[in-house]
Amino acid sequence: MIRTKELAFDYIRRDEEGNVESVTRALDDININVKQGDFVAILGANGSGKSTLAKHLNAILMPTEGEVWVNGIKTTDEDNLLEIRKNAGMVFQNPDNQIILTVVEEDVGFGPENLGVPTKEIWERVEKVLKSVGMLEFRKDSPNKLSGGQKQRVAIAGIMAMKPKCIILDEPTAMLDPVGRKEVIATARELNKKEGVTVILITHYMEEVTGADVVFVMDSGKVVMTGTPRQIFSRVDQLKQFRLDVPQVTALAHDLRKKGVPLPEGILTPEEFEEAFTRACDARGGAI
Amino acid sequence: MSIIFDHVTHKYSPGTTMEKTALNDVNLVINDGEFIGLIGHTGSGKSTLIQHMNGLLLPTSGTVYVDGEDISEKDYSKKMLRSKVGLVFQYPEHQLFEPTVVKDVQFGPRNLGLKPLEIEYRSFEALKNVGIGDDLFDASPFELSGGQKRRVAIAGVLAMKPKVLILDEPTAGLDPAGRDEILGLISDIHKKTGITVILVSHSMEDVANYVDRIIVMNAASVVLEGPPKAVFTYAKELEGIGLSVPQVTQITRDLANKGFEISPDCITLEEAGEELLRVYRQRKGIPG
Figure 1: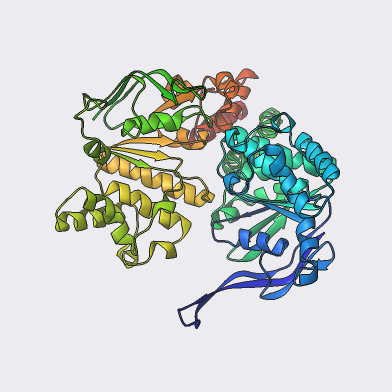
Figure 2: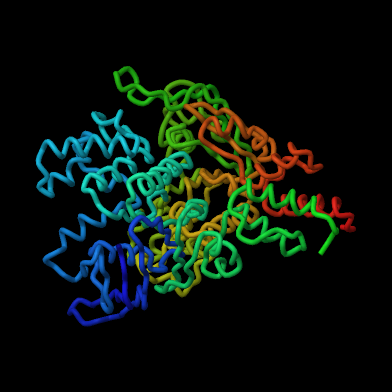
């Protein structure tokens, strides 16, 4: 679905005369391969290159070196730009920057309208996607009356109405409260499972990635770790070096393990912890 | 300096069809030097509440007393109030605008009409308190990293020498290490200067780690308040209003319910770790 080969990108700063002042390598030798239907999470500190990478996946930015393919099309192929953006839709951090019309259903229909979809089909798509993000009852409402989580779901619906194969969510929950965060993540999971949409989720919240198929960790423009959430969160100390963290329950298990309690690494939920702790206490043979 | 809310009600657009009650008969005392966590989901009234503390909003009915004075009085000086109660908004770095870091921090004190030497002294002290070294004083605020910008914005408020510092979600959008740095900084400032700090947060883990008292808001009212340990015993009630308890609290409570002899109200990682280790060793007959 999405593939990058030796992708590198430089931000170039120029002075008033257009002479190069400084060059910052934001992406460096990125090789990733995302399969159709995957739920992929990208973690990384502020400034690690996550958003720069995301912007390459639907041709907002073009590689300085290397290549990016979206659904078999190279992003540098300008004739196919529309095709790429149709296939890979992007949702940003601030929902207020993405909603432009005054009625929910019209906003959602804006994308397909621009693609030249016939009116009847636009309305069918609008109804379907609003249903799938759980916002159908708000279709006639004004977006500015909605909560952050609801607005973000409308933004996702607006992308889904263009029938993309892949949606890229760039910190979609950073400005939301815990309820809004859960709504948005649950919506993304649901779309992934039921509609088979490939999801690429960029986030700073470790709890949000526990359900992903693959996690990429970025640091200083490079992909430094790849694996399942369990594999990634087993490496607590390494993650801390990259200014990241693990879910609180994972940290608890890690600390206790260091002190001799036989718990497995990479525990992801409170339920798993309670089961493993009970087992550790009940096991015969005392200490190890 | 104490802040007292006496039967405070605030209505937006009163007397119109758009009327909305954002605060409903709120009674609250905030004592000098407290570190308070204010939690509640979006729309619960948190922002309306904090805007009453520095007179950006006035009660529709009821009274807010700051330092014993009614802030709604005609001749009460709002300017003085705002120098006493500093408010750091969400994403405060969006409000940086001066050409250099130090000028930006001096903007507030300059408006207070202080002497140049005092302005300079205060700006240096504030920047030092937020961990910005003098090598960055003359840098453009826009050249700094996200975390640094946010610290400069906080310094701008500290330079006013407020007696109360209110921060609206100061960690939004930061990576985990950045979150810890900002919270550690705020905690240090509180310890060093003894000022009252009010932290608006969505993270129960953060609130549990740092604050003396939690105030929980829901549907325009204060529904719970007390020390973190006491508030987090109301797990069901908190979940009912879209909030939660820290993961470690959930774990210790579940294990206590399953018959482990464990204190059910651990609220921090360290506390829960020690308690679980003690229980494990006891079960295994290992001397602690």
